[in-house]
Length: 200
Image (cartoon, rainbow, N blue to C red; front, top):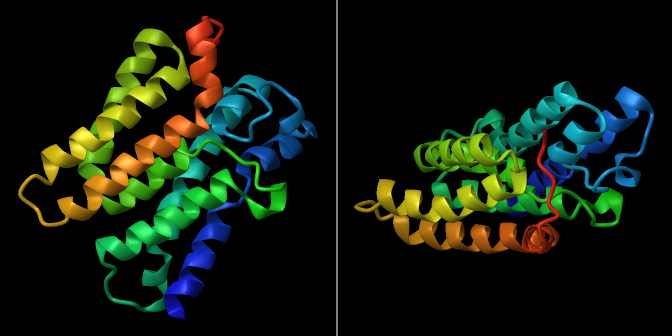
């Protein structure tokens, strides 16, 4: 019962629509009616501005990390990797399918970043480094996100090769990759057509 409660809380934390709130606070708009109509940081960046885009990126990542770690604040001394992963998955699902917004949310990249920084920071930072490199070259966030997503399972295998936790982390990282590609299917189609926009 405690795990179910924690998972519900993690989902609710993940479902906080910081992009939507930023649109209302900054310009009094519903960001779902502008740009790509997505509540994620990229659309906030394009629609409202760089400052707000960065704020939403950090907040979306922070809620992912907090969703994995908040039980520690209740006095629990330690959380296993499996527990943190369960809570992290709940948060990613909350961000992507928020109950408050008719289950239509963001694409899950920033929240996944926060989740996996809290679960396995070394492969996550390595994949984020690839994101930075690809974005610097292309200026297209979707390409950078997909490249980092592809690299993440490889980084997990590299850093956890001799660790028994690989048997849990690797399948989850592969499932995450498939999920991120699914949420980016419209971006992939625009990339195929050559119509995907650079951020700036």
